[in-house]
Image 1 (spheres, rainbow, N blue to C red):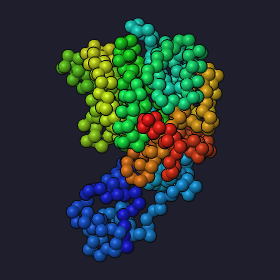
Image 2 (tube, rainbow, N blue to C red):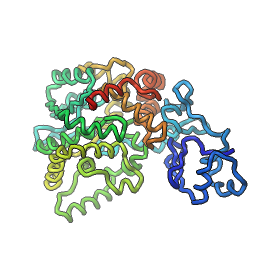
Image 3 (cartoon, helix red, strand yellow):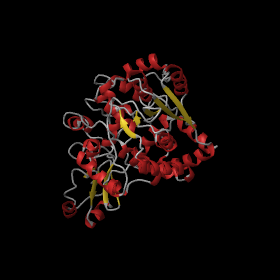
Image 4 (cartoon, rainbow, N blue to C red):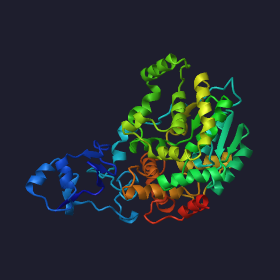
Length: 462
């Protein structure tokens, strides 16, 4: 008797894979079926005649297998198979494959991805601005990464920093304390915070929950709130605080192709882009300004059709954009700021600090925490082993919803935290032992609903 291999799912005339395949098939996740193949596949599981096996021949052994050869997907971490090199396993990433040496695709791709650091330009030093009170701006959450970035920019580089905080209803107590301590200890930083009215935010959250089964809108909604502020203050650089594992996760989630990581250095593409700007009487874009406009226009007007056609859509951002439409007035200041900054060339450049490089080669979480506790008064979460996403008290809810949707093949998006902790353990940002401890104690990879989901719903359903 034959059946469809685990993690392959018939969708119309396509067989789609929900997982992460070995190289070189890592992103070959769809197979187009002929009418005859589709008719046979729709009958599975069943016995097949020789003629039917002949029709399905290209699929037999991979997508179509004998029932006894179907992979069993584990239902808990204890029964999972782990990569021999990193913390990746087939419970938190169901459908992940392993090569003959037991390595996952993330580790198999180390040579290919070692230079894929950021999809926005990398800058580790910044000039002092002659046209603004600020040299740089940072979206500051009170979490580990944004606090370290704030420390580096203000205390190490001694820049004038504008720190922007969106007061989400789920901000953790440790993040709130960290922000207040930073205000006392970082003299060259000016802090601005914004909150969205409960009425408007609940409209957005209700829609987002219906689409994503969680309400996480960071940092996208913060960009909507603060971009006009950056333009008004003529801030030359907006610095992202994403750690390396987060940026590389976009590649493994098939949301950013390799060219996206090299675009900032591609002089030919940037030249062609600026020819188009000149023809429409707009000033040429400097490094990082294209990425700013692309990010803000996506939030204001929706996802790029070309990007979707190429198969690099980001369902996370798409759902946020759809949810924001529930409060259309919130986009009006953003659209005005996009138009005025594009015409004037006064566009804050979206750039990334290479956290590995400024830390001497490896952005080691334990070392980072010691530094920001001492220098910024950072307050660690109660879960001391936690390194991922330390500023939100319902982070487990986002992880849980992404995991359950992917596990049950309702979403093609691999849970971001699953990729990030695997990449971090591969690159020695944290040890495999520490990663396992965090995975068991602090992350939301569970088929049973986590308590944080009730906290989330309590806010927007009230």
